[in-house]
Structures are given as structure tokens and as C-alpha cells.
Amino acid sequence: MGRVILQSFGASRTVTGSRHLLHTAEMKVLLDCGLFQGRRAESTERNRHVPVDPDAVVLSHAHIDHCGALPSLVRDGYRGPIHATAATSDLCEAMLYDVAKINEADARHLNKHRGPGQREIKPIYTSKDVDQTLKLFRDHEYDEPFEVGPGVTATFQDAGHIIGSAGVLLEIDDELRVYFTGDVGRRMYPILRDPVAVPDADVIMSECTYGTRDHPPAEIAQGQLADEIRRVAETGGKLFIPAFSVGRTQNLVWAIAHEWHAGRIPRIPVYVDSPLAEKATDVIVRHPECYDQELEDFMYSGGRPFFPKGVKYVESRQESMSLNGKDGPFVVIAGSGMCEGGRIVHHLKHNLRDEKNTVLFVGWCAPHTLGRRILEGNTPVRIHGRRIHVNARIRKINAYSAHAGKSDLIDFLSPAKEMGASIYLVHGDEDTALAFADTLREDGHHSVTVPETYAKYELVSRMTSVD
Ligand SMILES: [Zn+2]
Picture 1 (cartoon, rainbow, N blue to C red):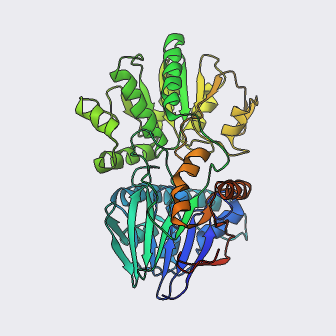
Picture 2 (picture 1 turned 60 degrees about the horizontal axis):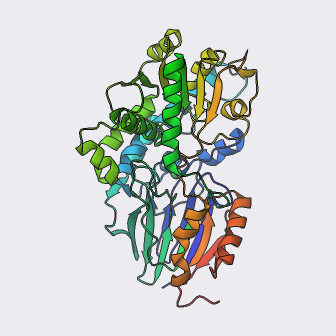
Picture 3 (picture 1 turned 45 degrees about the horizontal axis):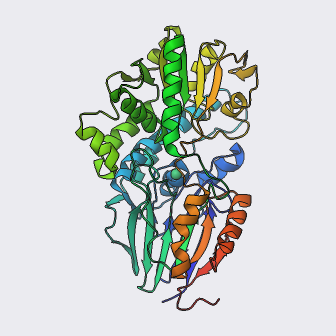
């Protein structure tokens, strides 16, 4: 076997832009091709061009920080296969067109207000680039090995993180086994099966997003959500839930359907105000092969987890606006989760002043986002250039994260000690990754590395590794 080299181009000592290249003697395999999210100028440049020329791409899941730069790679000439699970392929279609449309609209807006002599702004990529990208997808089942190229076989394992999410086992020249975890989900998480245990491997490339902290149990979230819905039904207010369109929104709808079915909360109207969320829900409905037992049992007993009576998916912008003139009680679930864009922003502008209303955060908000400012208790907040006083109740549920927490990750990686596998920690902020590396060393792992961006690391099998 020739040398196998790992080189990360993103999600190394950070949580964004997942891109890891494996050079084998005969080919280059790119694991994920995600968008960088962060300071605009810097991330735009890194997203416009992906500085690699792989022979094949293998995709862990459809979150945008794992798949969102694929159309840039294709526009720059990539014509090889993109291997993914069927549910990931379908979700990518919805996600990538959404990114392209937002980019095209942004570019149009900026060009309209461009001064004389200023260069035309081009979108990072267009819907046409997405058309080309989707033609390259090759769908695979979980646990069915497939050939990636000369000397490289891959197998997807259920990662339990979002629908279609997978860890990838790469077998190289029958000598080296490398497992890339993608994002690791949580046990007992709604809709999804639990993450499958790490397979026997020489090298494990693991995410470590929450390597320094645990989440409250996911079951707690359902009770808190039910309490907020009961409260708003009594007071006649409106409950606004900023939520990511893929994954989180479907969890919420399924939780509400579950509570209605059990007769535990009143049936007030629920509006899902996000076209992307509706598309993502359609994908989930088409992929029952990904459901856990609890969801199957619920459907078997006549429950409708994603389109229950009483939940309305709002399509047009006019219909979305009309909710502002409507009296409560009702619930609105709308993107974006951090309130940086999307329809939630106009809902907040019109409804934050009213103390009868509640805003319920169900996910993490990055510093400096509108969501974070509201969560931190700032008032007034600035929305579309206006100062808006915050009189609404502000609440937060911490238990919904779709990532394994610290204890889950320690348990998940524990078999690596017996195997003697080397661990490479990716997809975690630098401080978190370095601290979690120490945690794993104290736990008895013999070789833990936190790779640096662009640096090259030779991956070796256990037979040849030196203690
Ligand atoms: Zn993810």
C-alpha cells in the first residue's frame, strides 16, 4: 500500500466548512465539501473556489456546512461522482437551490445599489451550477459497501444526526480502515435512529463540536414546548419559534403532533412559515427507511407526524405577512434559527413589542446575531433600521441539539481504545478540540491529533503505527 495522507481544507480547529481530502497512492477522495459560514468577505472567497481537485466526493450529510460548496467545485470543473445516501441527495437538492437563490438575490440587490466604477458582484454560484451538481450524485444504502475508485471502498453507517446522515468507513487497499464520523447524533433523538457504533478502524476522524459540554436530555424539550403552547393558548398571545428549516422544524412539528395525539395540549393553529422547511419535510416523508421505532409506532397508530391537521405550511410572502394582522393564540415556526434572515425577522419586527407574545429559541445563536441580542435581553433591538422594544417573553430550550454532547462522544469513541485506533479530531472550535483531545488522552486513547488546516498527516494502519 502506498502512503495515505489526510489534508483538511476546513472544519479543522473550527466548526464550519467541512472539507477533508484523502490522498491515496491512486486517487484523491474529498470527504464533504461544505460552505464556510462566518465573516462575510473571508468566507465568500473560500466558498467561491474550493482549492482541491478530487477524483471522487463522499458526503456525510446535507447540512450546508458539509455540502454547500459542491456547486463551486462543479463550476470550477469537477465532473466525478458525489456519493451520498438517497435521503442526503434529496435534501441536497432543496438546500443547494436555496443557497443559490439567496446568493442570486443578494447579488442582484448589491448590483442595483452599486456605485459608478464598482465591479459587478457575482453570486457564489447559481441555480445552473446546482443543476450540474445534482447530475453527479450517486445514491447508496446504509451498510452497503461501494467502490469509490481504484483501491478504495466506502460504506455509509447511520449517524443519527439529520435524515440521511452518515459516517463513512473507507477501506483502502484492504490494508487501512479510516472512519469519518461526519456529525454524530444523539441517542433517543426524535425521528432518527441512534448513531451506529464506530466500526473497527485504524483511524477515526471524529467531530467534536460539543467536546466540552453536555446537553440536557432531549425528552425534556417536549415538556417545555408543551408548557409554552399551553401558556400562549391561555393568554391569547402568539408563540414565535425561530428554527432551522431542516431537522429542527420537523422535530417541533412531530413533537406538537405527538402532544395533540395524546391530548396534552390544546389544538391552536400552528404555521410553519418557511418554504425550505416544507421542501425538507417532503424529503423526510419520502424516506421512511430512516425512521426510528417510536415514529413508526406513532404512524402505525394513525398519527400524522409531519402534516398533522392543524399545521399549515405557509408558502407565499403575502400569507406570511397576513399573520401579523391576525389575533392569537397561534404558533409560528419560521427560519432562520438565528434570526439573521428569513421570515422570522418580519414577525419579530411586528410582534416583539407585545407582552402577550413569546419568542422561544430552540437552537444556538452565534454572537452578534439578532437572535443572540434578543436572548441576551437587549432592548430595544434594531430590525430593518428601526428600534424595536422587546416586551415579549423570551424563552430558550437547550435540549434540542442534534449533536452528541461530551459524554456521548466519550462513549462513542471508547471502542477506539480496544481497537488501538488513532483519532483525529475535526469539526470543533480550536479550544474545544484541544480540550477534548486531552479528555480522550486521559481516558486512555493512545493517539489523538487535532489537525491544522492545510497540513498533511500520514494515516497509518495499526500494524505499522509506532507508540
Ligand atoms: Zn450537521
